[in-house]
Amino acid sequence: MNLKDRLEQLQKESLAQIKDAVDAKKVNEIRVHVLGKKGPLTEVLRGMRDLPAEERPKVGSFANKVRDEIGTALEERRSELEAERTAAKLAKEKIDVTLPGVQVKQGQPHVLEQVIDQIEELFLGLGFQVIAGPEVEEEHYNFEMLNLPKDHPARDMQDTFYITDSILMRTQTSPVQARTMEKHDFSQGPLKMISPGKVYRRDTDDATHSHQFHQIEGLVVDKHITMADLKGTLQLVAKTLFGEEREIRMRPSYFPFTEPSAEVDVSCFKCGGKGCAVCKYTGWIETLGAGMVHPNVLNMAGIDSEVYGGFAFGLGPDRFAMLKYGVNDIRDFYLNDVRFLEQFSQKG
Ligand code: 2NL
Image (tube, rainbow, N blue to C red; front, side):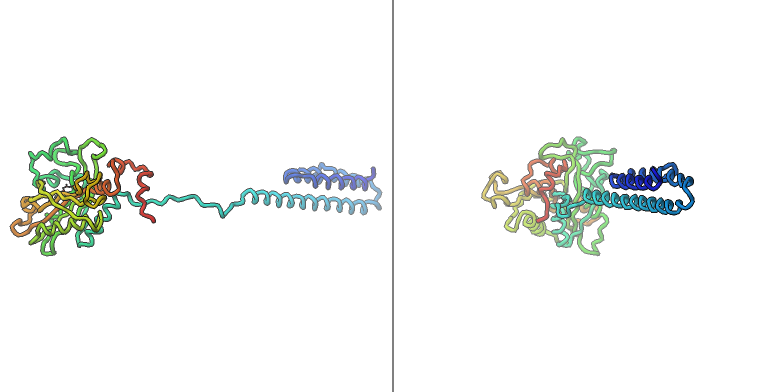
C-alpha cells in the first residue's frame, strides 16, 4: 500500500474510532495512540524519507491535512462528550422548587412560663416590681425572717433540702420579699412586689407533688393597708386567670408569716359555681394563700409595724396551670415531652 492509501485508511479508521469514543478518557487514548511519537501517523511520516523528492510535498501536505482533521475531530468529540456529561449532571441535580419545604418546628414558652408571664403582666400593670432572688438561700432569710423559729415544724430536715447547716434550697420565694423589705426606702413610696421563681421541697414526686415547683408571692407594705386591698387584688388575679365572671371567697387559715391568714377560693371556672367534677361539687376551687403581714415579719425586716402594715399572698403556677388546662400530673410539666408541651402553643 502506498503512503497516500495508508494515510487515507488511517484517517478513515481514526475518525470512526473517534465517533465511537464514549468518554473523554477514550478520546485521549485515541489521541495518544494515533498522533503519538510511536503512533501510525508518525510512522507514515517517517516513511516519507523513502519517497522521491518531488512527491514529498504533496504527500506531506496530505499528511498534515489528515493530522489536522483527526485533531479537530478529537477536539469536537471531546467537547461534545463534555456537553453530554454536563447535561446529564444537570438533569440529575435538577431540584423541584415547588416541593413543600422541611417543616421547621415553632417553639413557644413553656406552659408554666406562660402562666407566670400572664401574672407578671397583671402586676406590672398595677405598678408592682417583679423581683428574683437566689434559689440557694440562707436559712435565716428562708425561715427566721418569716417568723418560722428554730423549733417550727415547717423547718423539719425531712421537708427541706439542706446544703449545709445554714444554707438550703429555698422552700418558698418569701426570702426574696424579706431581703427586699430590709432594703426598702419608704421615702421613695410603698413597697409593691411579686417574686416568681422555683422552690424546692424534699418530697417524693408523684402526680400532685414535685420536689421542685414554682411559686409567685406578692407583697405590699405601706401605711393604711387593709384586708380590702388584699381582697381587691386577689379578685383581679382570679378574674385575669380564670375569667371575668369569677368571684373569690376567703376562709380563715393559718400561716406563720401572716395574721390574720386566709385560704382563698375562686368560683369554679368550669361550672360557674353550680358544682362539677373540677370543683368536687363545691362550686369553689382553692387557689391561693394570703393574709396581712405578721408584725414580727415587718419588725425583723426593720419596718415599724406600728406605722406600716401590709398584705401578702402566695400562689402556685403549677397548680394554676393544672386547673386551667386539666393537667392531672404535675410531673408532665417537668418531663419536657414535646408532645405534651406543644399542646400549649400560643399561635392561632
Ligand atoms: C400558699 C401560701 C403565702 C405569703 C405566702 C408572705 C411573704 C412575706 C410576708 C408574709 Cl415576706 N407573707 N407570703 C403569705 C401568705 C401565704 O403562701 O399557700 N402559697 C401557695
